[in-house]
Image 1 (spheres, rainbow, N blue to C red):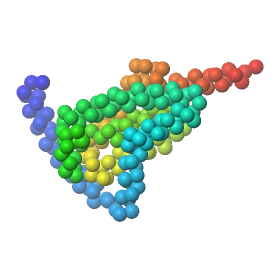
Image 2: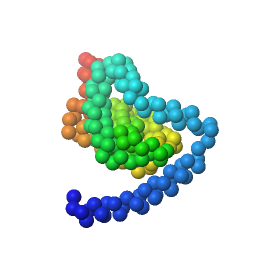
Image 3: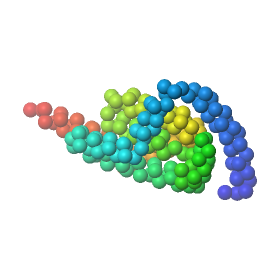
Image 4: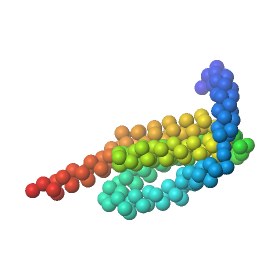
Length: 195
């Protein structure tokens, strides 16, 4: 990148940071005692132990397509998390609550990126559940801003990363697309019902 490009990027970051801080202040004004526990619980759902537990349940309870769905989800979560962790180290943005640890920096949000990637993948497998999947992903993302752990642009970038990786994986490797697994099962069911 040329020095002029760096200067332009730095010049653009000032207004973005100011906007982030202003929006974050507004979000913090919405905090209420009765919302604290639900927001912490939403954040907990995004932790790796719960994500992996949920994927294990899908693999065990969804018959033959469960394993294929989990395979696709894991194939998406790997690049999502590599990208998120690389950006965290590279950018090193201080969190809104003041946490300055580089390995735990604010930009981008791994909770939000993972939630969006999984919402995309699970919506491909169970289209009727897409409203629930996307609502949960948005609530997890909101909880990260509400709890003062991320700025809005951290979460916005995470949405792009999560959905972008899911779309890319599904389009480049169709066998990892849960919609394909669903179509194969439906086709097999129709074939077995035919005389």
